[in-house]
Length: 357
Image 1 (cartoon, rainbow, N blue to C red):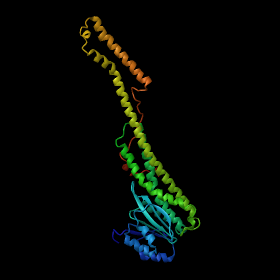
Image 2 (tube, rainbow, N blue to C red; image 1 turned 90 degrees about the vertical axis):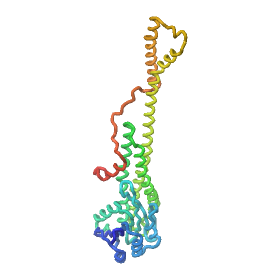
Image 3 (cartoon, one colour; image 1 turned 30 degrees about the horizontal axis):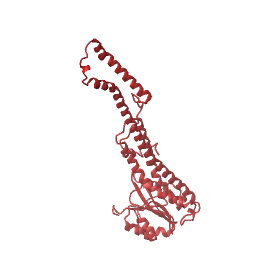
Image 4 (cartoon, rainbow, N blue to C red; image 1 turned 135 degrees about the vertical axis):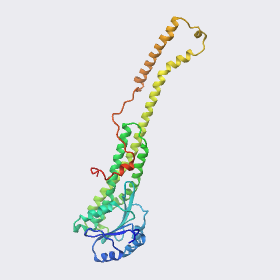
């Protein structure tokens, strides 16, 4: 098999992955035992071969070939057609398209998917009777894909809290808004991926047991998965709302700092206002000013006038402080929260912390 031909992985009852071909899949289908076939990066012509061996109609084939479709969960005449997304890495999504019937589960994706790898590991730990339970395996796979969002959303939420605390507790942060926008750019495709999928799950209500390929008791699997997806969507929505709060916090602190600068400018103007007035007044060429001589005049101009100016300045500052609420010395913050250099570096550590599940 060429390195560009992808890999057809059969998740067998023993939990072992193996490369197979369309002919072998056809034999499995005739045997009547349930199986899960995962096509990872398989080219379209080979996907058609497997679809033909599994007797899928044109509607299902078109669904598996459509790489631009939104996430969905819909009934078909043979079972369920679905498309969902999982986190490929810190900020990119991977689309997974699939068809579920009473006889098999088929998943198709163009990029490696951590969620499907986790599902295969979970499948290996299942007892043999559960491995043959098609609906259980189906919703286990869907839930594993949804679980890939959990760690990313938790870390983005923590990241926003850290940014907001830093901007409120210290001086202006270089690149603050850029970091907030980076978080928002990660959240937007997540919401677009979970939104339509969540609506489709909600629209099913209690009819899942009557869908082709399902069986009695499947409703509990759907309810668990639906609750999981709705919780993830709500978490992503709240996280996106926090980006607005973070930007508002930045705007508020910027306004406060501008107010502090204006306060100091007001103080400086108040100090020099009396002096400027007197200097300007005596700088005019009045005739009586030109002939001021004597000891009394020196005492008046050199001693009394500066004292009056100083007293006037103190009274003016007292008025500004008590009546206008201007603080001469702004309060110092006790502690500033350290800030990570970038959002990408922060999220790249998503699996390094064992206490952050």
